Length: 332
Length: 274
Image (cartoon, rainbow over all chains, first blue to last red; front, side):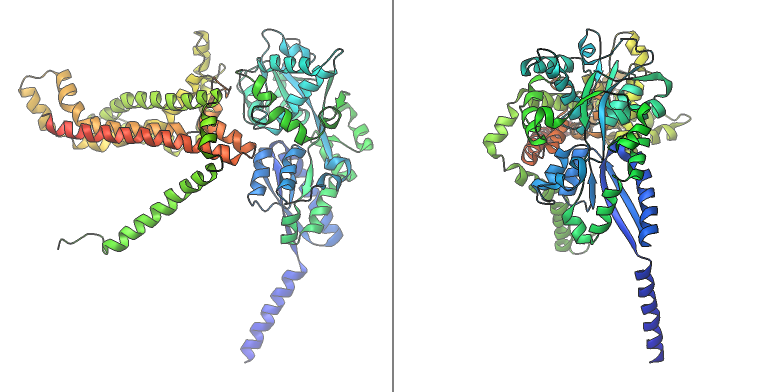
């Protein structure tokens, strides 16, 4: 009998012990180029949460192509939050009932705590003298961009090119279509993802210009390409808004709503914005932006909403089967 | 009654069928079920799209050519490994399996690095005006790479058991070396060569990981059928993806069936011929 009491006491103590030092685990499903960003953000958030609540948070990451990640969550990847390349991929979760339809209004700035834009990466010294979008369709210029049907980043590239042509003096839908058609005639390799395209350009030495996320371009220049590449900022480009959301169905199942909410809000905090800027994403906060102004040159930026409405519309018009990209893409 | 090696014929047959059902047939049934959302009309419609046709042509044409190359070169390699003794033979022999072991993406990146215009091999080819990486030839190179061990490994055990006395007999009867090869050895190897061909072909048709890096993925030019499936999935078009999968499966099945028939025919032929 005494033995039994002793065992119960030990078990009770163990249970109490685990309850006191609670460890929360979050899973963040993100896209490829955010590895460095979330490595920093996760560490900072975990430290802050521990200081404020005494609990440890472990944030596990899952990286992959943005569309693939959305599909994985639909198919049951138990992600507490998704931080993807474009709102369209999170819309998919809303369409399947995993999150409410108004998800994008739940957080400030269209649920995009940081932004980026599309810039050009060219060879050292810019031998082909590429300054703006119109230079990309000059004879002899080869452009590297991934396939917008498989890459979220490539959809921003496509829309940026379209928007540039549309916004020129005398621009029209027909002229935009002709410009983008000409542009894709200059694409020799159509990679499936943004990192693949960066590798094709930097490592394989294919092409004269890479259309890239600004954060990828800065990273490529700093790390992989070394001194062999330069960034060219065009006269205008698109404001790329990578969006974040908590996955209601999963956080309610895991009981992690509070932490997940705090985690996403942390991205908007001065500290979170600072981390985004350090990882070459354009911060939303004007103060932090001012501090890193020399890293982010002034570009005339148009938004998806300005020109294309929302992703459902843009997708149906450009990227669905038989839509404009299929009509004018490479090989046509 | 003849004693069987495995106890309980019914039990082992049951296990085999259940296993086959779970591992092979169930996923295929799921594929067919997903594809059925499209209907036969939709499937035909899908197959009539020029881009789909071009991709299927590249996948199956490339795989057939790659398998043919592998049969010729694989026969040579297997012959050398079995019939001759030379230093480093075991190492050479082990190296044959590398395409099996290497993750396909790694293989693809390595091949691209070699054949890109700035790669070790690519720069020499570029000087001659030949482009391999990012063209259909690149697809062929990757397909040859992944299919190669299948041919060598199927041939080796058969070559080892070939009776030397048959060749010696042919020689005593005055046959020349090429006659011995063409009329004595080759007929005995045809069924095995066909097996190797079929395996290499099947592997190359479905190959995605390594091909995707070295193909330019340009629609109508260097886009393989599995990439179209991935693209459909990216657009959440599960039915379209599954339908393409079923179409590829059907083609492969017909091809493998033809090869099996050829094999039976050649077996009979090999037995009757001498």
